[in-house]
Image (cartoon, rainbow, N blue to C red):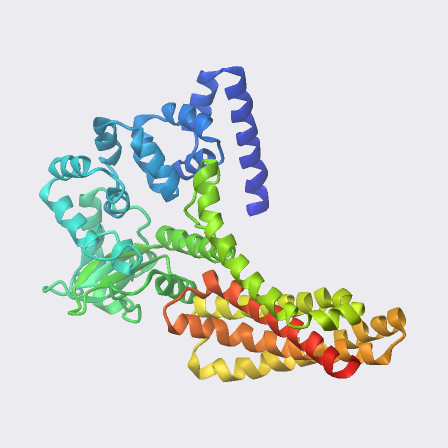
Length: 451
């Protein structure tokens, strides 16, 4: 499906670019406002600031709030700074409670007060309930707009109630069953409601195995629950058992996408919410910090090489072969690190299985080390006609691949234990380890064997 969507998106972006160049505002207006808010947000994020402002001015006011919710934090903040108070209030009105909760944090305080005053008491209470929890928890993701029913009524009664109600919340696949004290008992799937004997009671056909989610549950764990149980929606239940709201699959998809962006961007030291078309100076400042950290680790590796300066002067072959040892170790460590970071993110790696994973990764490293160190040793012998040089690089590669396996497992686990995101710092640490160990083992062994 992604392969089918991508050309369409690119076609729209190209069409928009040409329309902007030709100055055909009417065509741009028609194109933009025929799209889903998420598509408009993606399109805005794909434009440089100047063109982005032009397109944003052409978005219909009734779509602005939905588009703002879909934008990444930095682009959203830039657009909000350019909007007037009345425009912001109009954009916020009509949003679902969970979406409004996400947007309020970025709005000026005066706008927040006006938005709250414009809401009825019921919606204000719902919003307060969502804002009581961190955004990255089930409580922060939930929508309080739910349909609840009692277990002692018949299915026919439920159907009459729904017809009288006239509409149900979007993405409703189940009705939540509660007792007279509003305590969650289970869920009634709409399919069963429509296909079972209407004289049966809700309690007879409801699903009691669908447990509620605690509001403090981290968002990534909520995503795992939806994935493992193939859920479309799930009840959020307080510690006392009261029904608070529901999480729907559209919010979970956003969490999964954000987790994927986080992993990819953080491993490069970048912010997943950063604007791709941000100004040069802020972008350079953000990346400069990461480059500075890498520079410090590079000096450490250079210091290790400097310890063996006399060896390198006498045996130039070692200087030629140094990049091979460091590169092979770096790739091996990155492979292991990626697997462990992914496992940590999915909750698949814990203390209970860490030792087994370490043993397995060391075995993989030694097997690959034997194979590729032999190849490199043969090439080194054919190059320099010296079995000692071949033996030194063979041993150095084995040592470095062993260190790569150790670092790839131990470093992310250690960082996680101390509350540091392994996706952020793991790459720098393991690369430093393999560079230092690789250079030290090659030059150290070269000093002992060849000098």
